[in-house]
Image 1 (tube, helix red, strand yellow):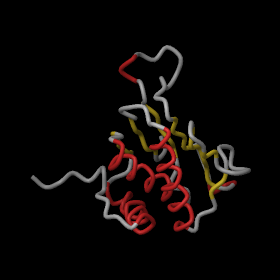
Image 2 (tube, helix red, strand yellow; image 1 turned 90 degrees about the horizontal axis):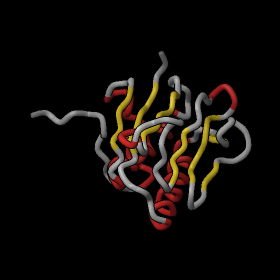
Image 3 (cartoon, helix red, strand yellow; image 1 turned 60 degrees about the horizontal axis):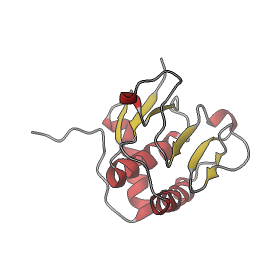
Length: 147
């Protein structure tokens, strides 16, 4: 088993939403100092009105992180209850901070439900990166608030 993040996209994203997510991604990418490439660890990240997809560079990447404007079933034969569900195994590679930062934004602004094999402390750097890059305060989406 590896270190993996999971999410459920709870609604389709509009073109305006995707433009905002793309801008957030670019700011996070720049502020991270991590080399981010396309889905296969080469080329440029896929950033458009339909999809955002990226990976780390070479051995610093692992699995592709990808979201789509339109929610999809995660695999053939999946039931409707799985609509919008996805995951990305980052294996603690350097691009993990960009993945957790973007998932933090997606949870806060677009209602994505997120979880992880890691604990809240593993997400703190990504949450701080999102806050710094976007000039907003984000809370850790997997840290349970004290009752």
